[in-house]
Image (tube, rainbow, N blue to C red; front, side, top):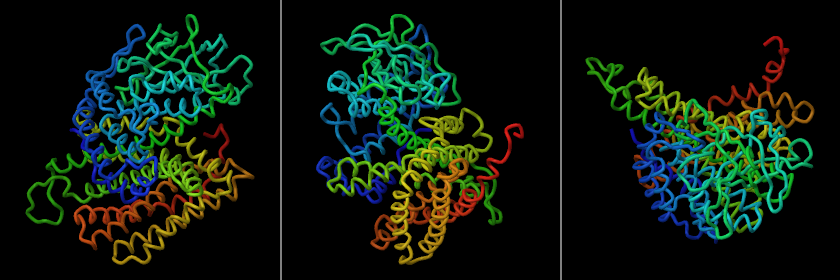
Length: 595
């Protein structure tokens, strides 16, 4: 089946939860009116549903071909990318100084969701290019910016991240790639693995952002530098020159995202790969985190996207598949399985979690826009702190939830879901990488409890919980059974998050192993509560709109879905908080040989 972007819900989140009107009031985003954003979403939906979605399944079955260091992508991908670039989609959020459109993140994140939902393998390519753009723009010299940014923003050239190596994994302190000074450049040598879109035929050049060590670099992460290593060298007039000594030697055979080539890259196997230093020596990891933080939010969004795709397919199947009779209806004919209570429960679970995930991700993007474009310095500071806090939650919680949601999609299909031809299994397989990309869930959770909470003694998390409490207070004043049920569950979940956070703060300094042992549980707890916060806000807005007689079908569904989230998802937080506060000892108690 194809994919149709949920533009009605996207617009609700953008306009009513993320408050596009306020973002539009910032001088740098004054062109981002509601009308323009609506038009952009409609046009992006056409490309996603008519061009990218139709080659998703075929790309999965066909994959890529590597021959003599050249990767040929699946049928239709090269043409789809040409259309993508021609229509200007690559530069949506980029700086107008380099040919971008300068639209706020709240717009680009919605469009990016469409690319990933329609075709996650395809969507990874422009996502990584955007990260390369961010790194060069923030940390590169004027010469690097002049040489590379306009082509990257345009999409004529694509970008990659070359971080990990066979012996290093996620431990970048173990990176061994070398960078030897040679005139105005460096000669890079070494091997990098797991390089997404590291080699392909969709763009005329590929710009590798690569971590390596200079000869006198100190050990560990303090000795890592960042380099721009182009596939083709650039002539003085901006044209492409000779082939650089950076080659793909193999592509991985993977569980999912088969149409996205994951390359093993070898640098400097012949004469040495020409690379150009970004910023200063030994600050590469700092610079790379500009790419990483962008990518982490984007990968969290992949979780939203692939979950949405799985939900759409499961919903369609549930409406079409005739099986069994309706419970409690004597003499019932055989009915579509959507009539069965447990199928409805599973669909509601998918729908409610996706809407909560989308809301948290988009609101985080709105905080980014305020931090970047706001006119009040204190507001900008607070927004920036909220982005830092919420990024590991978006990345970790949305991707972990996506695995659960896509698995539920397979379950709704029953035995047919286990058969590749239906496509439900592809979404499950594709989702699995998202919890590993750009730092595993464990890394995100360690970052959350260590750097984002304990290091600053909970200042930002307490400020965010104050925002959440304001919503709980508003719910207490609302009328109706739905809001009452949401208020009860949300208030209890806030108490659970407070209890768990207090325990983290009380224990991290003297014994960090214990909080780290339950950090993933804490991240899940925080994600669920953050989702409940946004669903509670959505319920209040929906009730107000219903009282005005606005779009009753949509707002009734929004209110009921928020109640389902409260009663089925928020209800898990008490148990999660118990595990955080009490579970560390048993997690660490066994000796190695007892496992």
